[in-house]
Image (cartoon, rainbow, N blue to C red; front, top):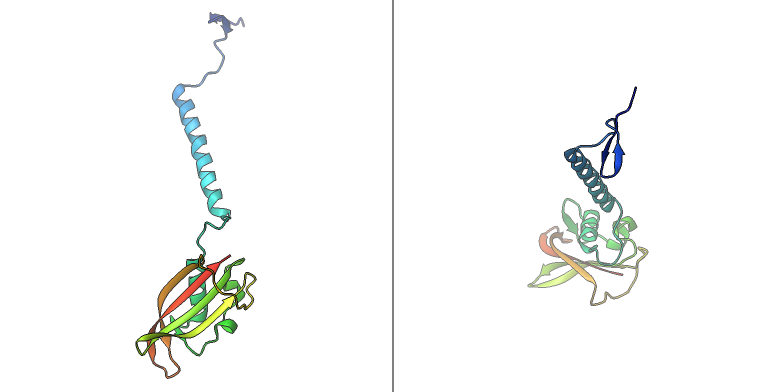
Length: 157
């Protein structure tokens, strides 16, 4: 078999030489770009964020409330320090918890606790830059009466 070559732009080109269509090349490049962006999006969701710019107050308040309440009601006889597991606290952060209830037109504290960054009970005061999360809750008093109250969680490094 004799190969027939033709000259194009100073090069000899064989008719058997493979070439791709421009549209097929664009589709292939688009598919690779899509795969890379999908991979990058998945990796950023899987790898935990680092740094102090992430908010930990809301998830901490949710976790703490789930642990200290029963049927979405906080019993004022509950000792927060002994009820709360260290796994409910954000690791590496100090946490201050306070449950208050409306009593005679003012707010009275019915439960509080403070923990250091390791989850041990501490007596440190929250700094002014602490992240504060508050939410309305129901509180059962020792008399059995249920009153409106407030859960306040402060988180700081």
